Length: 255
Length: 255
Image (cartoon, rainbow over all chains, first blue to last red; front, side, top):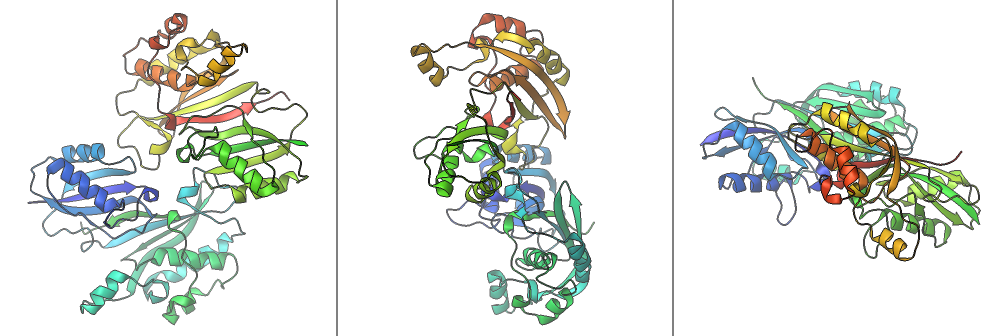
C-alpha cells in the first residue's frame, strides 16, 4: 500500500461540509467516489479537520492509502477530471510512513473575510460575511493580539459531538491551543482575519470572528478577550460568524 | 406614474436567465416579486436585453413604471433587502419620459472570461470558460480587430425565437450591427474579451468567443473572420462558448 497526501481547494457552498454523510454531497464523500472511480479501491480519505457546511478551503490536506501503483501526476490529472469543478486537487504526492492528515498536522491557518460596505457584489456574497454596520478596524486589530500564545479556548468552542464521544471513551480531551498569529488586515476592500494555531476547536474561528465583530461595533469592550478566555464559558463570547466567510488556508506538517 | 431606471449586478449561476418563466427562478421574475413585495404593484421590469441562463451581469439596466411615490434611495435600500444576495441593485433613479431599457439602449458592452491554465480555482470555475488546451493570445488579439465596424452578423447568430415572432409580425428585423470595440487583454491570469456594439444578436458574443477559441488553437485561420461574416451562415463559425464566462458589463443611453 502507498500512502498519499493531497492538497485540495474547494468551494464549500456546494457541500454539506467535509465529513461524509448519507445522501448528502460532502467533500470527503465526493473525493472517495472519485478515488473509487479511478482505482476501483474503496478508501475514505482523512482530512486535516472537518470543515463545516459552507466553509471553503484553499489548502485542505487529505491522506489515504492506495494499492494501485499510479504515478502522482496521473492521479492528480485523473482526480481533476473526475471531480466537480467546485473541488480541485492542487497537488498529489506520496507520503512517508505514518503520515496522517489530521494526526500529523502541526499548525493550521484560517482566514475569515468580511465585507463592510454597501452593496455587496453578488460575486463576493457567497465568500464573505456582509456586515453593513459600522466596523472599527482599529478596535479588532488591537483585540486580535490578545489571543497570541497558549490559552484554554473553552469560551470559543461549540460542543463537538465527536469530542464528546472521545471524552466518553476516556481519550484525552483538552481545550488548550497555541495561537502563533492573529491579525486583521484590509485587502481589496475586504476586512480579513488570519489566524495560525496548533489546532482549533469546533467553530472556534467563527466564534472568534463573531466576538471581534461585537468588539468592532462597540457591543463588547476592546480589552474583553482576556476576560472571555478566563470565563471558560461559551456564553461569555460573541455569536458564531456565518460559515461562508471562512477559508481553511493551509496546514503545516513536520518537514 | 413614475418611470424608473435600475442598474443591476447578478450572478447568473443561480438563475434560468433574465426572462420570466413559470416555476423557474429568473432575474426578471425575482425583481418583479421584490417590487410587488415593496410597493404592492404588479410590474414586469424590462431589461436592456435577455441574458441567457448562467450569464452574469455587472451592469444590466431595467426600466419600469410605479405609481407609489417612493424616494430613489428608499427603493434602492428596500430592493437590496428584498432581493437574494445573488442580485444587487447598484443604482435606482427616476427616468425621463419615454425611457425604455431595451429600446433606448445605444451601446452595450460584454466581457467574456477564459481561464487557460491548470487547475482552475473552484472559486473561478462558475465565472470562466476553463480552456486547458494551448491558447495563442496573439492570434485572437489580431483576429478581434476584424469585427470592428458595421457587419451582417448572421453567421454568429443563433435562431432567436423572439425574433422569429417579430419577423412573422412584420416588424423590421436586421442582423446588421456596429462593433465599436473588440479586443482581448490579460488580467489576473485570465484572458478577457471585451466587445462594445450597437447591439448583439442571440448568442452572438458566445459564438464570437467560440470562434476565437478555434482560431487560438489553430483550428480556424487567424484571417478567417471576414470569410465567416461573408458566409451569412451559422455553420461557418465556431461553436457557442459556455454561458458562465459571459458578463453584461454596461449599457449606454443618450445623455
